[in-house]
Amino acid sequence: KQWYQRRVRGNDEWCDSTGKKPIPDEGQRGSKDEKTWKIGTLNVHSIMNKTSGVITHLEEKDCDICLIQETFLKQSDTAKIQEIRDYGWNIYSSPRPVRAGGGIGILYRDGVVVKQMQMKRNFKTFQVQEVLIGTGADLTRLCNVYRPPYTGKARFTESSFLEEFAEYLSELAMKTGYPFIMGDFNFQIQDRGNFYAGKLLTLVDSFGYDQLVPAKPTHVRGGTLDLVLCPKERAEKVQPVRIFPEGTTSDHHLVVAHLRLKTTTSDYKTRAHVEMFRDFKAVDAEMFQEYLLEVDWSRLLDETNPEAALDHYTECLESVVRTTVPIKKKKKNKK
Image (cartoon, rainbow, N blue to C red):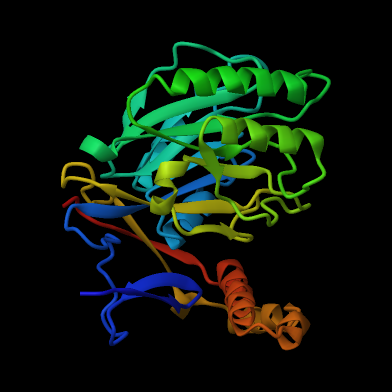
């Protein structure tokens, strides 16, 4: 049977020729042992004060795993880690070893199986984590990278980072599993005239990687700062990569890659402690109307591309719903 991609409420779904039978939620396409993993990257700029918002956003976008940067988590923040678990997620946290702030983590749904890999080397110019997912010939090494910008407290230049990152890519080539690198690199990749962005793209190309994030803003002030790097021979397994400009109070946008991998039932067992949904019965109708009136509809009316107009319309409505419709939680038994 052939499957076709269609747009449903701003999201991509697969369906048969009748358009009435979308592929099961596991995202399977083709062979029975293949699953589409939805893997995100997001600089949360502190998970401490926006846990509920981040988890809700990942649930709404149906993410399985999310590589997060600037968690601001410390080793002693056991209560926050427990709160994340209460939402039905787990976190592999790597706090910044010196100075407050920073830190990286890998969020994954309860039931998703990842194997944490210990890093034998600490780099000066960036933080990195690695986990393994998938199985057999599709074994994949997810790499979470955060390169902080140059500051008075972090005096590491772009040149220093490029030198260290080249060393890391060399070491990565010797490890098991196909590498799949995501994170906040703080390079203006969308600027073709940017010297250091060009050097980074040349570097990753020389190691056989493609950069898959489109040249669109991943930050509220503009710039394609968050990247997805994949071996060229595996790039056909990583489509599409999407940017979601709203959803949390972070200054970065969620970037989600769809990665098709062969898997086994033991790699992904759907179960959750808590089911979260929007309680439309509890919505304040007057507030909902006020927010609708504040939406700038002029862009929608001026848009000539129907698909872009639909995306903008969906984003506007989702923003109003996130702001005005409360979240309700329902406990569920594990399967």
